[in-house]
Image (cartoon, rainbow, N blue to C red):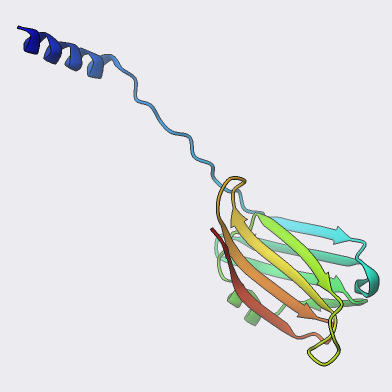
Amino acid sequence: MKKALCTISSVLILLFSQTIYASKEAPLGFNSFYFSSEGVGASGQVTIKGSQDSTGIQSLTINAFDREYKISKQYLTKLGIISANQIHISYEYGYYGPGGRSLYIRLTRGGVGGSASGKILTLRANGKIRIADFTNE
């Protein structure tokens, strides 16, 4: 009798209980972006302007070192589909031999409470570009 009562109680609880859904944070990617910094030292003013869609970054223009750099399709393809929702910009004076002044642009996708992944674009004052993966878990 006790076993039947427990079974009936369990069935009633399951039938009349509401489904509980856990909330999950979802990163929102930029459609377009424009960032500006006064810069430090010899970096001069820095501006970064671009756009992206579901297939990746479509355009990226960087003004730094008193020049404008339009990032070519070759490098945009290397950035891949990251649907960036964060950007970090930093500058390094550097030594002339290895390439001198450098601007680092980290484009990432992530939330406020977890891991992030993306790409780091390094732009040297001589116009050389390097792209590397970034993961923060």
